[in-house]
Length: 168
Image (cartoon, rainbow, N blue to C red; front, side, top):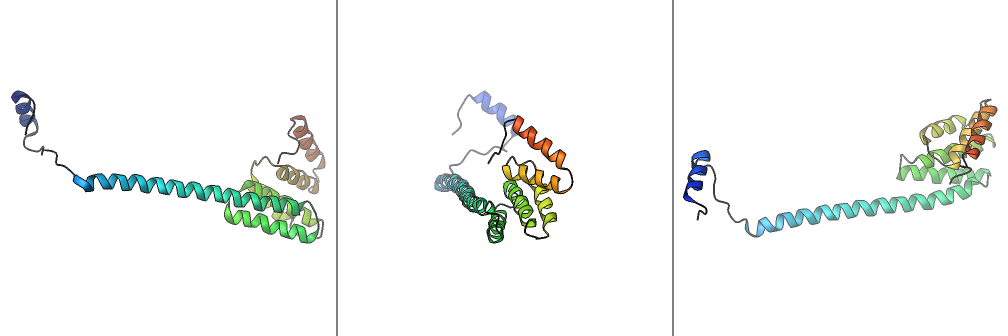
């Protein structure tokens, strides 16, 4: 059935010819397909969100354990701390906080005679601008170890003046 005035119908017919077909009912399939698509997208979003939250929880648990081990400074604790931080990088390879902490762990390991100063520098570089106590400390220690103690001291004093202190 056509609706509207005869003149309007004739104008449409003259303009597009017989190219326009009347719209057909899509039935049950037309209803189910969009519902399934929306449900699938929602499920995928929920899955990705849950995976992200789980990853953050796993990282947080390992980071707490690793930090506790790192501050003991003995060889076994530093090795365990390094292992935990590397596990964090296995879970979240771009984690700047883990890189910063690994820089500090490796610096501490040099106190025990391990030749890992280059690893410490690499991890510090990968830490980027992470605002963590580990990055600030590793940066200062590595500068001091490279004969730039005055520069390291000036940067640490600047942090205290900015009331940054030791962010965690």
